[in-house]
Length: 376
Image (cartoon, rainbow, N blue to C red; front, side, top):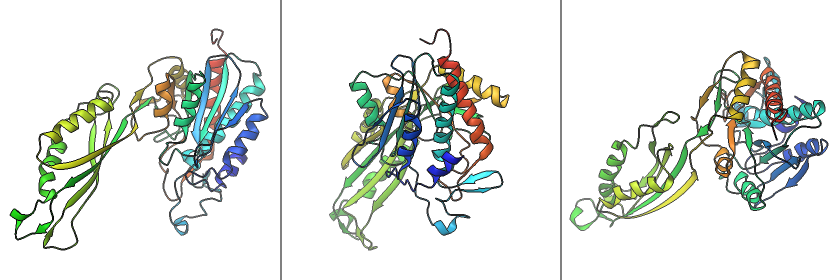
């Protein structure tokens, strides 16, 4: 809890690490980890490893947090950790500084009891998960791949739990593909539509069609792909003028039934069937990924059952995470962290008992994966 409090006092709003990673690096270096600072642009990244052989078990997470909003709305200052009713309050308490503190202490406990183990331990931490995420985990993974370094298993400390600690773990995530659209027309007087070309009228049938398409029905692990318009702008501000331009943004959260290339091609085919002058730019936040049944999932399930008496639900729901950058390198990824009920909210908090139990779960995962006779 002392480590968690020190992290919560750092005003690490994306992409500012605000001193969190040096705190963590000092703890890891004392355990014999080789700590590498990997700054890219304004983003701070830390990669630490102890051991030279495989398999490699990596704990990953982020030090950055979303802005706290109006601090006067908080019951206590968002960057001054405060205990109330058995919970610790502060921005980042659940998402995800409690996960980071639990990881570090679990590693300390594991190494104290098992200074020699099969394989290697690693820690990957970024300060840009909540932001655009271009210079964070993605760049670190690219660096590791370029030098031939492979991570076999990764546990992300994202707040995956729903109602109680360990009731849900993420074994995959949907892909996220966004479009930025401009539809061009000709401005004119509303009374003379024959002399103008209203881009709103051009776009309306296309928008209706996109909303009625059944993109897929999902599969065993993923819900159906969803399409959502998140921004739509047109007009001059005058009631008697039709606009010259319409701008829109939309997003697909898509399942493994698609790749981003096939989804883009399907959308562009719909556009091609309509008569409009447009420009469409794409942004891929991440492809969908799914961790298959194997050693990592079994270790996580066992650790949870031993501490809670219940088997977790294996889920691919929620938003995106940095798992989307780690999994494509051939790494098995699972997200296990605290309850997510208050993340990004005013008075974000985490139950103190959950942080202690989560630490024990992480330690047990290490024991199950790195102390096996055949772990090498």
